[in-house]
Image (tube, rainbow, N blue to C red):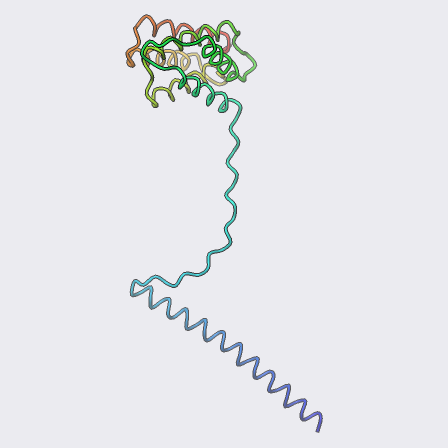
Length: 192
């Protein structure tokens, strides 16, 4: 008798488990049919809980050149146009940041970079560059200061771009030539 009761209990337990499993399957099937019908009628399906948010991938750290270029950009912003006086400290900081931008084996001399900083300061004190031109100038200067894999013809194009940029910005033609000559002097020391 105990065996019969145990067998009946086991059968009932298995039946209940089977019914419970089929109940879950039937509910899921009903949800799938509902979602398909809603999709056909243009109704968005009910939202499911969002998966746990993953932290965004850490942004790549800026390279030393990018950090230095950012400092040069900030230096440019401190120089106010309309023939204002550029302080010696502003020129020194600009020269320091320009020199820090040079990361290659052939770095320009401090005197050459100081001459460039002086010419750039004078020009920026005459008239500020637009954001677009400032970014172009920064790109050109970074290339001259780090000329790895840059051909001589490309360097000439950079020099021409800098001169044309300042002329188009209203800087006196002689001043644009002096800036370009200062950039060429830096390029002569970095591009071998």
